[in-house]
Length: 299
Image 1 (spheres, rainbow, N blue to C red):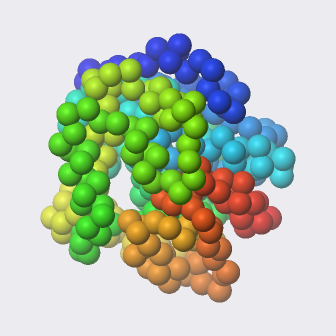
Image 2: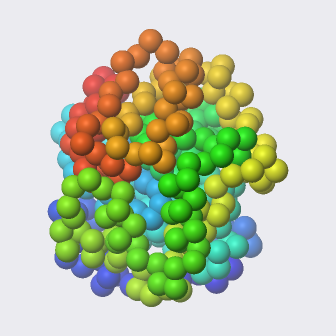
């Protein structure tokens, strides 16, 4: 596995993101290791909240939420997925698979950080990974927050808007990461914010992760991830771990997943908030509002 590491200077002068990164090694499939990065805020003994980002963002996405969670006494931990942010970047698209990303986050969360009684917050791919971990290791979790995400099995077709996104990512000669983020927001993003989303990717060779993610999402019943995702649904349909659905009012990609998640036992009988005025990246559009809902839920 050929691994790239973004130079530290690319992350200088990030707007409103003062947290120092922490690093740990997790196993790669070839017997080596990959370095994963995360940032954290809040008391060390606070209830842990694991904030998982998606495609093509990184922990910077949670910068307006970390202070809210920390002020409420929670221990907020925001990793960078392998291939994103400050984490190492396998350089070939074939190095990325759904199973590998689940295992890399599992290794960081449980083997390195030894999180117990954790509330996982997952948006986009963060939810695809977090829901799998919840189903496969329910004893580790106190609760789950699903925000603009789902758990596809390939038995239902994805919305056309998602297929347009996938085709754009697959065919773009130059993948404009900042533009992808901007297109998923309802509020304008400053030039400094857009630059921060570009920071992890000095050139096209660093973008195998963002390029791969749409192609490893299960879109047909014979996809390699279909069987484990179906198994996860079977567990979640019997699991009573509290589940909050905090979707925005402006994300056509994930909206069809909302009623499926709300029908799960862990979600039953709850008032699930709608984050208004927000697009796919609701952390950008309404981060403090989402954080406030998480605080109320954990309490």
